[in-house]
Image 1 (cartoon, rainbow, N blue to C red):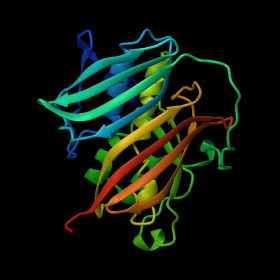
Image 2 (spheres, rainbow, N blue to C red; image 1 turned 90 degrees about the horizontal axis):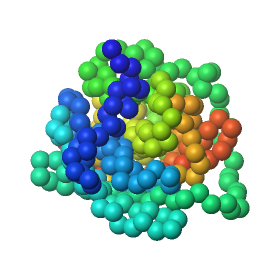
Image 3 (cartoon, rainbow, N blue to C red; image 1 turned 90 degrees about the vertical axis):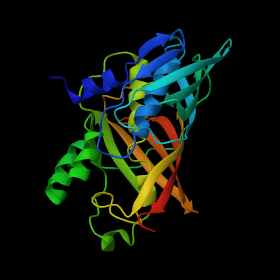
Length: 288
């Protein structure tokens, strides 16, 4: 038996078909589409496998073009756009059953000295003082199949919401479009920095759009909106380990025209800003 963390590492371990072509597994799920964080994480692995590993990822920009089908392998084709003196650029196309479902551009940067500043991390309770998400879900929702299927995607991570979850429409009426969680992988992920970066990329797509939904409906339970990620961008500022606690602070500055924008900041326990994230999602009322 393998642990959820080991299964995540295995999911991110792509098969090399040709020099710049890789194939990734896509687990069979009852949900409609492949989890976007999985595709983004695998695409970043493919990009990183075509570099010499000396330059860490500093940014990625991606578009979700079509929903992927669970259970069907995904092929990742890498274009070696540039190998400069300090920057390396890769473009990745994800293909499933002959159709492009995802595009990603990733940039790698040789570390250099420079000045530093950052805004402070918000004051929040420590993760040890917060209940695990899985316990909250089971206590309120029991064994609902859809909730458990959505939880399965989160199994590699211990997730703890900073504020209590809201379970009724009345509770969300006065809520601001903000959310924050502590997260960490439930087991060790090894020492390869690329694995930690790709695992965090996987995790970053789990709940960023929750910030858009917070004022609209309870985050767990039956959904009133069909939701899909449209694009995703990340900037990696400092080295980190995804199997250590990190705070994922999220907010949504605007939602309009059936689209909601969310931005996130990821901090370590020492208050250092590790990663910045932006994402836009599509929200369509179910049955509307």
